[in-house]
Amino acid sequence: MFGSKSRKITDLTRALRLRTAERDAAKADARAAAYAARKAARLYAAQDTAERLARALRACAGYRAELAAARRYAASLEARPDNAVGLDHPDIDAGAKWQDRRRDVIKGAVR
Image (cartoon, rainbow, N blue to C red):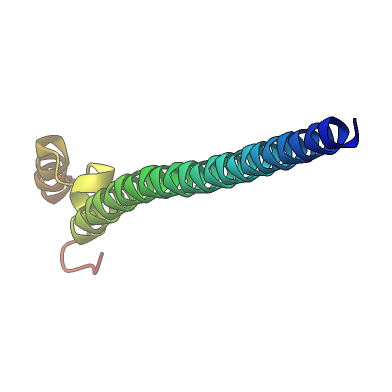
């Protein structure tokens, strides 16, 4: 009578230990999966940040190239101020010749 109860208690204790070990293993697996998910999320965030940084650097390089082109254009205009304001137009040269032919200009006067 007591032998069957002690076997039953032993069997139940063994089953309890087995289920406890399975539960602990499942918890450990869940912790490992959660850790892997967090690690993957951090890696994805780092990759996303790296991609955003690369995109920003490409945009910055484009802006710097546009700025350099604008500076070169401005420098070329500054190097050619007559051309920039239209003072090298042929009509202006014709006007200078017209000034020389004016009748009311005093000869020898400094202009």
